[in-house]
Image: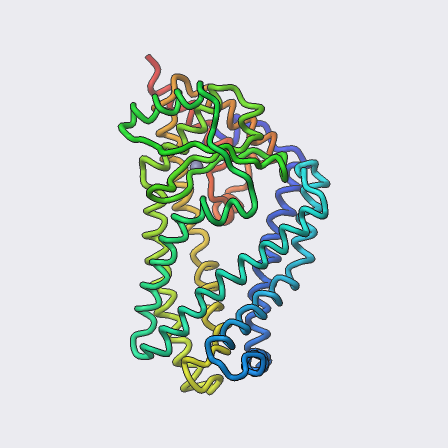
Length: 379
Ligand SMILES: [Zn+2]
């Protein structure tokens, strides 16, 4: 409780920046939701399906592909205004190193990656629906689980490099510190990579990514450039905490439970739409895709506070791991302060904002936890 009384209040600039970012996030969500609802209610989805069939010369798999790409394209175009606004926002607050041309290229890449991933998933989904109309939702759930595991493994080597450059960390002293941290933990992290974030942003960041042989800690070059070796070690220890506590695997398990409920609800909604509302003739009519997507969007919205609470629990666990494994928590505290300044993060968001939106505990709370831990373990 003392966190909010000890920490100095956030500046109006920081509060304003974070408020705009939150509203942008809400705006994006509402826009996505509205697109799905409008396209279903107006029947435009059937029109798009007919258009896809024409373009595909009546081939079902090709029509599914065209329909999916059109849907991804429409949502990208609709969201472009807000994407541009957030690009300008980062510039306005001197947080960006990106030029308009680089941003535009990123948008094209995002669309292409989105279209490829979405069309693969949707093809798989409607293949399953056509082959196994009785139990499609259980099989689709299992299929998506396999894809989620595969994606978690491939992302660091296949997806992230499309947007950022990575290279193995060269710094010998830091590598030695990591090895020592790992030895104390009885674990071995296969790699630490320098993440060339500075090409786009002035913010600092770090993460644990990958699965199995792609498991790695990535450290932004912005962090490596401006933080002391002790501070970087504190960040490494936190990421190692995620590794030791198996947070990525647990994340996939939670995702599995959520998508199971999602597919069950999707089946229920589709049956209802077909037999009661007569919106679609069959399950395999892919014009029903927006309804399926809608179920998952609503589900993830409803579960957002719970998912964020769970994420904050994991972050506290990783923090505690760091406290226990670095020589002094003061390096953790100073790394947190630097991160807050550099990223314009709110140290003391309102309880309500933290509860709903934050995947990480507020920085003032994390610092208070570090100091509390140090006091409890003094001597
Ligand atoms: Zn973390």
